[in-house]
Length: 257
Image (cartoon, rainbow, N blue to C red; front, side):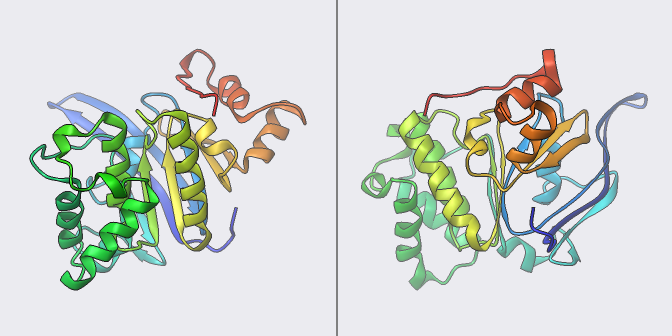
């Protein structure tokens, strides 16, 4: 992993409270730092991946600890950080009456891009996810895979320095999964990309580093090659590492692409 930290997570803890006594510990003193590059965030259901992403994207305030980006603590009120962030959530309600173009133009406005730049920026992002010919269609006519690609395009708008994708290939066919991997690898050359996924093959061949979470703690981290060597020796795969670490908890998916 790159030794120059851009994203620093320091002793991050989050507790979900339901009522006066019921508590769920989602993150437990989680710490790590990452430099530029492409990172896979892996772990079974309940590992804390979504909680971590919600905190990094300022959608959730941690119980304790902090997250720093480029040396400064992130904050929902810090406009500069929001402009450097592109986020594709796992689920998002889309307006079926919008066209693909209108949806992306709306996101451009939310990101405060100058109006004269919006048409070119929408086309750039749509081209990267292979949606250029679909922008005039209403979202009600989009397939599940097309909606996923549209959300990915929305994250890319504005050329952010930090890109976060949560289960980005759900619903994509093998050909589009391969296209997505190539796209994020190219984007990671001059920024940070974090992908939370159950599809280990989405990150095994392209990630600079892998973070494995279990019950809110970092089990291990390193390049795919380092993890394979540590847990399996020279012969193996990242998927086998995942299965070895998590055993019966593993909810890993794979594809044949």
